[in-house]
Image 1 (cartoon, rainbow, N blue to C red):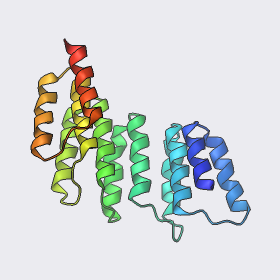
Image 2: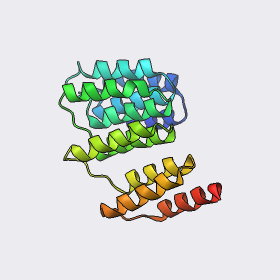
Image 3: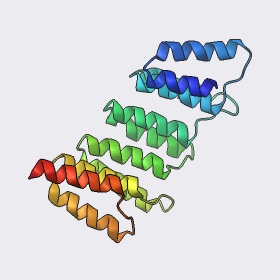
Length: 190
């Protein structure tokens, strides 16, 4: 229940109330779980309080049974992309690697989508290369939509079409969102 409340407070940009709820949990003698800590990281990060979010992750490292995992770091990366703090992503990825935490498809999709929305195409494509070379993460329709959305929204129709074909060659089929992105992109361009 605390996790759900913390997530809700994060979405409502209420970091002070999230912090207060976290302290109430602890004062009631309850031990925060990994999910509770991750929700607190999100509440801070989505509110622009990245220092507090990073501090919470650092604190988690010293708490038994609450070591940050790929889900925690993916939340932190998501917050960084939403706040356009792309300079912090490499630091997070380096820390994950040092701790032996491997990225998941969701982690890569978060990074790719963030770079794409910021029109950082080279970084987006580099992340895609890292994803495919990892050997454990396969691109999916979310990756597909991020790519064609990024290029389509910025008017790069040829690149959008190229990646549309590339993803289909990889065996990834478009969904309704894919076609909506294409229609919107063509509509803006023509």
